[in-house]
Length: 242
Image 1 (tube, one colour):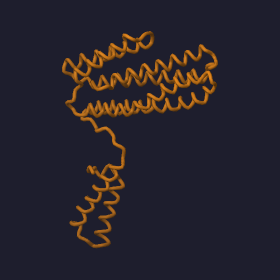
Image 2 (cartoon, rainbow, N blue to C red; image 1 turned 180 degrees about the vertical axis):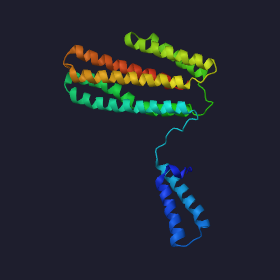
Image 3 (spheres, rainbow, N blue to C red; image 1 turned 120 degrees about the vertical axis):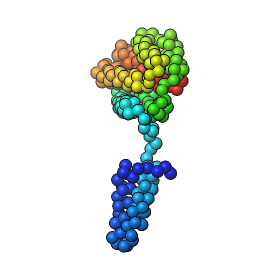
Image 4 (cartoon, rainbow, N blue to C red; image 1 turned 135 degrees about the vertical axis):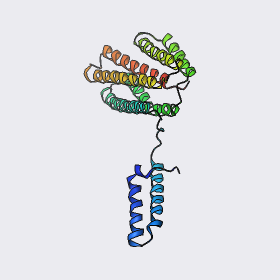
């Protein structure tokens, strides 16, 4: 069991205070004995409470990077909630037999977004430490993967890969100059998540307002789902370990 700061756990502080009060006022034990005993009880209580909490990524020594990661993780959680709501709405609207394939396309796109918060936690763990600058080798591998994906893409998907490649090249240049490219990497990820949320909103609007029995409307829903999937592939390249 790892120790924890009791000041972060009010319940542990309360138990320690009550122990001190009972020992000194009611049992009449010396305060010199009860003070360390109460402190020990509060510390052990805090450790027990901490052990019951879900594991979270360790805090970074770079406050600005930590702040950006926390903001990006919250954006990812919001995107997941948005996708879950959209999935439920799609199940309610796409009920005809000829719409089953279209429902599957939307559900697949929404399901993938659920993995994003956990992947950002993994990214935070890799970026831990003030001196853990992004590896040039890792960035080069990400760039190679993005360029490979671009070659097999077209239309909107190719434009998305072009944007990602430009971001990776900027980050790589920062790393080669000896600068910390981690903030730029996280900012690129944050921008992608916000763009994906916009596409998801368009998809929701289309499901709500379009004549879903129309083949044209169905094609537009497929196109938006594909665009959302493409953005998630971009995110996976940014998050991927080299």
